[in-house]
Length: 95
View 1 (cartoon, helix red, strand yellow):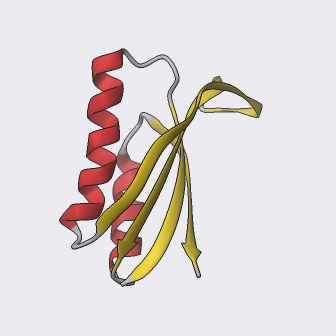
View 2 (cartoon, one colour):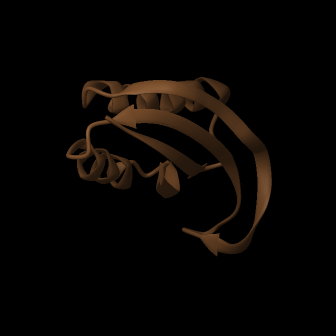
View 3 (tube, one colour):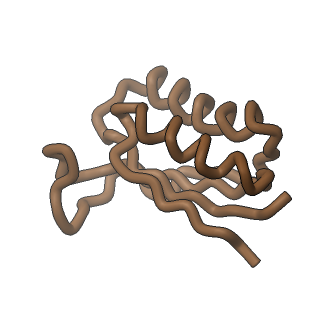
């Protein structure tokens, strides 16, 4: 299993319950693909972006560290693209 780090930019105007549900869904997507989450945290609640993404000028930044088999990366990337509340995802491998 390889180690990865993902930074998510999430729609900032979600109600608290929907935000918690979304963050749990992000973690569950990793565990469903035989991965394990080592750390997760909200990096910034509302942070202004340099340019607008999908008509949003602010975003909630969420950081996730996890381990996953290499074939699962493309599958979770596709799952994150489908969710309309996730504005951007940056996945990087950690040495």
